[in-house]
Image (cartoon, rainbow over all chains, first blue to last red; front, side):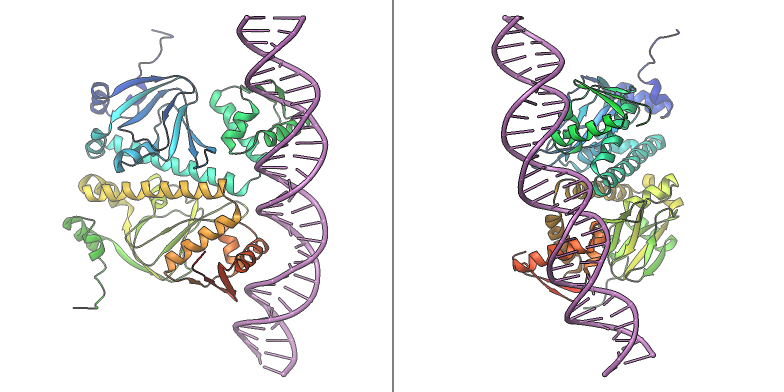
Length: 214
Length: 214
DNA sequence: ACAGGCTTGTAACGGTTGTTACAGGAATTG
DNA sequence: CAATTCCTGTAACAACCGTTACAAGCCTGT
């Protein structure tokens, strides 16, 4: 039927062999989270691997003083490599995962994961690809933090945010931005003002509109 | 016989099942590298996974402007997760791997890796563990770069270096340190001088001696 | 309309880091 | 030993960023 939302497993039908899709359907658990919900926090252990069916998950590092830093987003069809970490080595999480928008997850019991690695080539491939892509993102993050100045990081952040939300109007306070970049609200206000003067964006209350030549 | 060096495969006999050790012996290639040699550079592709038998490998990120940043060390018995990345996805490397000391590597052809993941549980575990440990190190690196000031990063760097080399006397120029921390020689000289005044270390030409209360 | 709370704009200041420049030591080479 | 090159120390300055403080604006609920 036209216009009907895809069945939630359709996405994975492209990735996994039928037998695995069937097992997924049978043995994993569907879970819904609201925008802003925290699924995984520092120090927690986790007993299920989440596959993201719809929505976006924000993964960030929080250091001992509570300072935050955005690492990357998990998008539809993807999963979080760090949870593999927690699960397999039974370690506590060193990162926080929270819903950037309302999202739907498929939770796979850890116990099954290991067996699937051997049983289903597509699963093995999926897990490896996920992990390897995350490495790339972590490197990108390190590049930003280690080599770039805040104004450039801010611009990249805004662009990424626009891509993830699919809109050039971002509903964000300066404080939120500061948090995700691991810095101070005043600094962000200053830089944003400069970008506004340069006609790269417009600042409203709790809202930023990105212009073409950002 | 007492004092005789271990056979190079003995290390892996503890990690892998006998059949895998046998295959390793038969199908992989031993390789020696001298301190300072670069095994893997940005943009290269790699067709073999290295297992480190002895020595230490330094893994660093180099950005577009040629600035370097130390990511982590690969030690005996370990391997480099990023090479899995290159290999499996046939991507070019985004990192540089060079010998910190004279080292011996066992090079496993990529073609075998995939099959072994299914065939040998110990190999699967080894690969997963390696990757997951690297995540932890990358997070540590991000913590340093994003949240810590240079003086603290320098201290951590020196301690780590002392641990890796097993000596409290480090043969390093200020320039080298600056490179590995992604900063400037003068800045390092300045901070080292301060540490020397604080009786944390002694500065010689091309050499730094760490004192107890660093 | 008003109060109170959250959000933004701005100034002022200090600390850290990056940069350039130069001088003096140390090591190396011929 | 002399010349050269590399390494270290230091000064001086600028840029960037973090921090505090305060004023003004916006939003919400009453």
